[in-house]
View (spheres, rainbow, N blue to C red):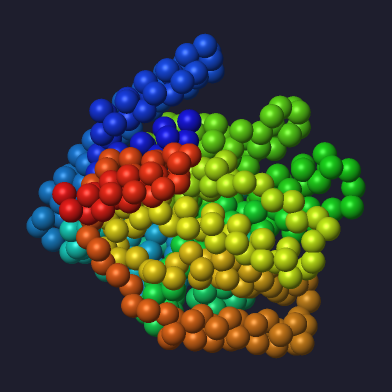
Length: 472
């Protein structure tokens, strides 16, 4: 089933649904488990998901053409509603805006320098189209947006209260409190807690990119797992009560962060895993990943074009593969330094497998990769976990009382974390740009390298296929 996800990801990086690759993976899955009714049902749902995705994506492309025609003559007046959480940056605020053009519904990304915009507000705006780079069209497609416009004039009416509006208030409070306390240094903690990355400085972006740990800033399963772990440690009751509390905390966190595809993928997987535990069913990580992929595609078909979602699914599939092929090691009874070495070695192995399997997607979108990425990820996860825990604790504490010592300690931790990342980036080698490999040849080589039992033959044949993928 994991290969179904990888085939879906490969078809995604070609910027279209590659029906041949996708349906071939379905045939392989069904052939491997031809007696499984669940597998046949999964195959049928995958076909429906592929067709539904094609229809919805073509509809968004048509909306993009209508947007260009509507704004061709200049600015136009629009009325509509803020349909998702506004995000701040150094130049202002941007937010998805649901409106109508020529009587048909349209969702666009609207930018303004007015910081008082809230989720759910009804707006009447004079908007002008923003000329964007060609690669932005795929970003807009992944969000289901028709285009980008700048608001020249805004008349605002406060929107109706809703359940999601209450989560927006928590989101806005966290952002405001971090900015008030840390100033410009709040960009990284805000990205880790609520997913707002637009305010991160170029120097910090380059440092994370050079170390190959930019993915640690994107909200995903790691951040959700940290939150669930904290909730579980705080619970002193039965296992079922802890699971219920963790699920409630995860739901609250995902709703507060907003519509982030990679975090939603993690939440769907977490919900499946909790349901399996409660119903006392066996936990199948690969099957859970595939079910989450199908659910995401059916719910938001255009999200397959999201870079974050593609990397998130590929990384999770790589983790599942790494856990399956790596031998289990029991560290009980060993010395602490030996146990630490086993944990670091296992983490480095998993990180290397993840780096290998996401490499084509990374090169396709960014054109470069870091040679120290696996090691930097192993060392960076504890740092990010510490900073995320401290950020969540500080925001929660500030909502109750003002504590100067906690504020000073949190500011010190953020400063030290920033200096550690900057120092690591200073000594790290430059990123490399080997070119874009052929995805099918690359993943065929990776499969031989990871699954063939005779290691010398696997290294030779797998390495040759991967090298050929860069030469075609």
